[in-house]
Image (cartoon, one colour):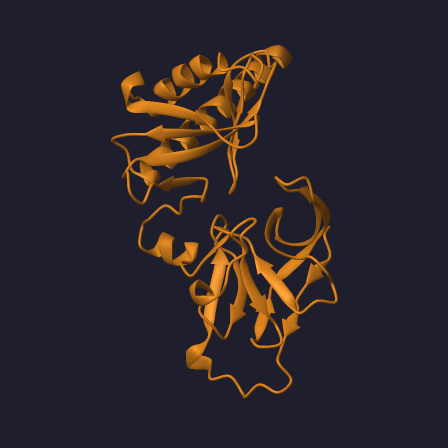
Length: 243
């Protein structure tokens, strides 16, 4: 099991924090309590490299409810390699530090929200992972896809906070896999091909699919239904083999 880490960063010279001015943030995907801070995250500066929010723990008080996510090496577009000491909620990273001795804490872009999934369930709403979101200007829904190529069939794999993972039979580097993706998502989302579009992302493994006529909640619900159906079919096949 991962080691649980509950860290409190404080400013030694800072005044006592008024509890009415605290901001509580949750994992945007699981809804679990991520951290509490004495400032509005939206007002924090952001990194140019990845859009992460920058918290100076010498100036702000923040209490994290995370586990040690280990050390990761990230290669940037300019070729530089960056160390990230990850802080996770479950298996999902929500923050990192570049130097364990630095006061700077980075909260990953799109990782947290002030909206709790417990409140969502009480309101009867479905909490949608950040990999499925509505474009601010175009109004369409965008899905971030991650491809696993040379599979025996084209199918959904799973939905995480970061990506919708898809198995394709072709090579991910080729645009021919787009036909597979169009056919798969037209069936899963019950849409016409004309209501879908796709473009390449920065990595050859990733694509951005746009969806018309559906809300993010509807897209996520139909993906969940498709994954549930796939799991049922696999269970039925195993039962037939052993029956």
